[in-house]
Image 1 (cartoon, rainbow over the protein chains, first blue to last red):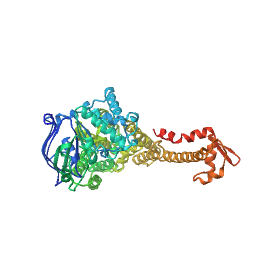
Image 2 (cartoon, one colour; image 1 turned 45 degrees about the vertical axis):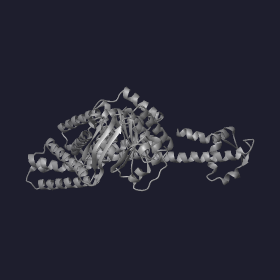
Image 3 (cartoon, one colour; image 1 turned 30 degrees about the vertical axis):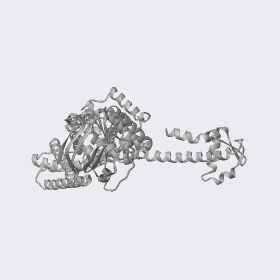
Image 4 (spheres, helix red, strand yellow; image 1 turned 120 degrees about the horizontal axis):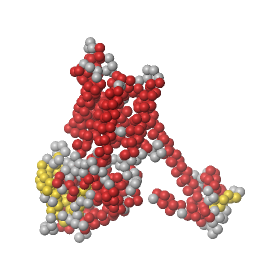
Length: 246
Length: 344
């Protein structure tokens, strides 16, 4: 793994909302082409880490680089799937419209999406199995369907690195399998995928790379080497036992 | 029109705060120039409106106060200050002072031709900017963080939207007045939201509703003496809202209730049919007659439902015996499949 390129590099990152730091002195290297889970208890700063890497939050100290360059210069390479709960789903718009938003970034200011963008959006909807729902008002979609729409919006961006904030939260088994299959397909295409994840049981099955986070970085590396009771205990503070299938 | 954005941003009260914040601007502009030229006064209103808005944003981002607290605070502060200045002006020996209080409730009759032209120009400008930055406005409203990650300067878009809301409000002040302006901003948008699930249609409808209330309101107040225009316009706009809440086909209360009742009836009918189906199934001959009495054990059965089933040719009645028809049998057998198909 050491010979592969570094997709995301985080140095000395510290983030605080008020007085108490949410992230403390994080150093992290994510190699290209991994499917990585970020795990940690509630309030460990998992979403904050993603948001700081993406420049949504301003860190107190530290720097982030994407393929050796600051994020601002590498936007085209990065796609973000926010938490489903972060938007108002009663917003008057359709599924296709939301997916089209994925093309806005490459369009830039003022220019409007045309046929090419629409075609890309339809293809992405097809990939997540949501094509029949393209004209649905987004409030009339189930939670799992909304999540898939968000995923499709990121797919449209055709990025190299994907950040996803809890894509498996509150979705049923069918959607979970559909999403993980897409993630695995992305990895096959040598894309880097970083997922905030809560279900520890499925980590060894879904991911090949993992980062343990609890304000500080506990450990990061290949799942088969570091996903063990020792690191879980350090992260969650209780003696957490999982059966690890190696 | 711009009200749509305020409603969707859940910042409806912002309009209220802005219009109240404009009052001291009007008063100060009058004190400085000593003239009642409406353009000067409006520029004063614009400046203090913007000032109020950015103070509100400052309070929200710098302190832990909720946005409604910040809005309320600024609203009453500016309005109080404005009232203070108005009373001060009234005590001054200046013949021009009369009529400033028109801005409180608005008076369309004070409009002169140049005011109308100004409105037309600014409206056209708003429309132009709206069309130009449609995509940016939309993505900011829906998902701000995401907009940031794909490279839009969300602060710029935000300031742009807010500035135009302020501009629209200040222009409306002369007609509707400080106190009622926010209704003028929000009512058309709230009404429009009921009729559509598309942002573009919503904005268009809101503009139409707004224009209609303006025209109707003015017409009504012109036919009666001593009816001031502003309140009449707002009442007309509110009627649009009430009608929309009740009668709009998808989100309206009336049709929702009708659909709800119809659904219940359909379900009752289906339940009865499937109950009959289970009895009929046990016999070789599906149209073997059964006594109506058996059905009394089934909860929810009424003579009405039986009659409806007969009307639909699902059931044949013979004295006090009933039997399923072929059609009824088939329908009942496929009932569950059919329902899941309807769900898509």
